[in-house]
Structure formats: C-alpha cells, structure tokens
Image (cartoon, rainbow, N blue to C red; front, side, top):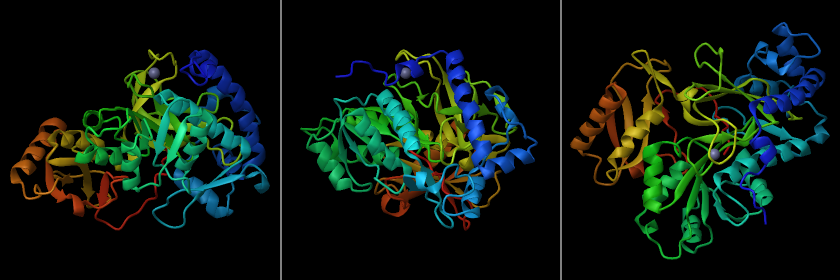
Amino acid sequence: MRRDTIWDREVETETHTLAFARASAAWEKQFRHLMDHSSFYQRKFRSAGITQVSLTLNEIARLPFSTKDELKGAIDEKPPFGSNLCVAPEMVKRVYQTSGTTGAPSVLALTRADMEMWTTVGARTYFATGIHEDNSVLTTFGAGPFVAGHTHFVLSRIGCRSVPVAPGDTDRVIFGLKAGLADTLLSTPSFAQYLANKPEMAGSKGMQLTHIVTGGEPGGGIPTIRDHIQNALDVTVTEVMGIGDVAPSLFGECPRQQGMHFCGGGHVWVELVDPESREPMTIEAGAVGELVYTHLTREAMPVVRFLGGDIVRIEGSPCECGRSTFRMRVIGRRDDMFIVRGVNVYPSAILAVVGRFRPRVTGRARVVRKTSEVSVTPPVPVEVEVVDGHDADANLRAEIEEAIHSTLIFRAKVDLIPEQSFGDSGYKTRLTRNSLPRIGGGSGRGA
Ligand SMILES: [Zn+2]
C-alpha cells in the first residue's frame, strides 16, 4: 500500500528554482527536437527572426504564440498528422480526435513516451484530488475518441477500482451509485448538478458516494454550483482541468479546495500573460491572466507557447497539502468573454448569480450573443433553465435581473426556459448561445 498522499513528491514539492532547472534542461533538448523535426515550428520561428540553434527557457517569451487555428492548419497542410508531427508516423501509437464544431475533426498523435507522459501527469492530477488506490471510481468519461478517454489509463496507474459508464447513461450512473459500487464520481459539473437536482439521489441507502471530481468544463469551482452539489449529495467536490492539445489532465484540486494545482512539472511549462496585451505576467497570488503552455517532453505534435484560451486567477502557493506548485481557478474561456460598457464579463459570473435561485432554477444558464461583436449593449440576453412550472414566473425573472444588475453592474434581459426546451444534454452546457450561424471550433478541453 502506498502511504504518501503526493504522487510524485520530488517534482510536486520542489522549489521554484529547482522546478525551473528541471524544465530548462528538458526545454534545451525540446528546442533542438523542434528545430530538427517540426517544419511547422521551424517556419514559424524563422518568420519571427529566430534562427539560432539553441534558446534557453529564460528567452522563451521571444518565441511567437501558437493558436488552435494554426495547429489545425498544420494538420490540414500535411494530413493525417500534419507538419508538426516530429516523429516518423510509425512511432505514433495512439490517436485521439478533437470535436471540431466546424469542418473535419482534428487529430492528436501520441508516441508511447507521450502516452506515458500523459499518464504520469494525469496520475499526479487525480491523485491530488484525493483518488488513491483504495478508492472506487465511477467514471462517465468515454473511452474515445476524445482525450478524456486517457483517464482510464490514469485510473489504472493509480490502482483504484474503476467503474466505467458511458457518457450520458444516466440510469447506469444512478444504479451504480445507489448500489454502492463507487465512492467517487468523475463527471462534468453539469452532470453532477443534474444528479444533485434529482430527488431520488438524496439520502439513498447504500450510497457510498463521498467525492465528486468535476472536469471537462468550468463549474466545479463556482461556489453556488459547488455548494449545491456538495449539500444535495453530501459529498466533497474537487475539480480537474486539462487541455486536449497539451495534456488531458493537467491541473488537480486537492481536498483543501483552494484551486487546482499545476501537475505538469518537468513535462509542461506554463506562462501567464495579460489577456489583452499578451505581455508576460508573474504567476503570483491574485494575478489574473491567460495560461500559455509549452511541451517540454512531448515527442509527436509538441506545442510551444500555446494559447489555451482559459482566463484564470492564480491562488498562490504553497498549500497545506505539501505541494509547492501554483494553484488556480478558471474564471472563464476567452471565447466566451464579452464586454459590457468596457468591463470584461464571463458567463460563469452569471451562473454564480443564477445559482442563488434554486430550487426554482436548475443552475444552468447561458448568454445569447446576437452578433459576433465582443461588445454587448445591455440589456444582455440571458437564458435561465427553470424547474417545471416556473417558466412564466414573472417575479422570478425580475428577481434574477435585479440580482445580475446589483452583482455584475449591468442590465440583463432574462428568459426563463423549461428543462425540456433548454437543449444540450445535461452532460455539458455551453455558456454562450450564438443566434448567428457559427464560426469557431471546439475548445478541445480535456478532463
Ligand atoms: Zn493542495
């Protein structure tokens, strides 16, 4: 039996100086690997004026950012694996697909070493949430084709009992939980919230469930959502986050519930940049910025200074759990952000307000964007999912509008939508609905 509560104690508790030294050594090799094998990055670096044969981690901000669209372009340029495949195709041993909402899906190729890296980082992540070898975990993450399927390797590595259920198979999840097959549930926060709203889940005899780990979308870190799930199901909620192009599980929150620890030490280098100017920022408590990722050890399809699109608040370190890695909470997706009278707003802020109106609302809500403009003129259209019988509740509508106005300082026009009309599965909720034909691709989030 393993006694340590930290999966990779040496890496996860080291000082910033040691972490930087570890990353620097890996980066030097990685930069050579890119210059030798990635025609995509060779070209990109050259056009940014970088022609040298070595470049230290201290100088990384000289390199240009990479975007999701560019990576997709690299695939299209040389299918199936693209001009950023840095290994011989026969080295590729696993392929995941991403859920592009427009056009063909994109692919992610992994070598054996890349799979091992994802499993190592994933084991640190889930172990940090409190999943250890004596736990029994019901997971609703599918085995494929998406990167969240890699979680199955991670659970095997940790050595816990695994109870897999297909995504969306609610009956089997409820059966499994009520039968006492699992003490831990892995799901999206939308699905956890859906379970928490089901009366038959409360106080079931035989239930062993004590812990829900949410991932795949933000929500597990929003207090009104978290508190509701914790209270209704008598569980502890922690959350994980990953990015498909980087690692499917990269941040994990420990039971102290003070934000998600970075778990990619030695394999992924993270920078924080100003969301507007993209100037580097220091990763320190209170800083709000966009996370930027660089693979230090990925062999096939490594990314350099990849703009992940997640705007986060740094919660600082160290933590009582002993990990010295920084912690963060996601504020929102850059793509979901809009501006009302010069103030940046993320739809997750609206969820936090709407959640106060349970049990009349379910907790789900979304912003309707009528143009592709980032600036929205108030009143901002917001759709709120309500429990049956409340869709014509004018008082409720007025109360929510008032709460949004007093908390977020802008006017909203609320539409109450009954559960059967809200759309989306209960599994994952889009925080923005465009009433225009849409633009843009999937976020490729991991879990
Ligand atoms: Zn901790």
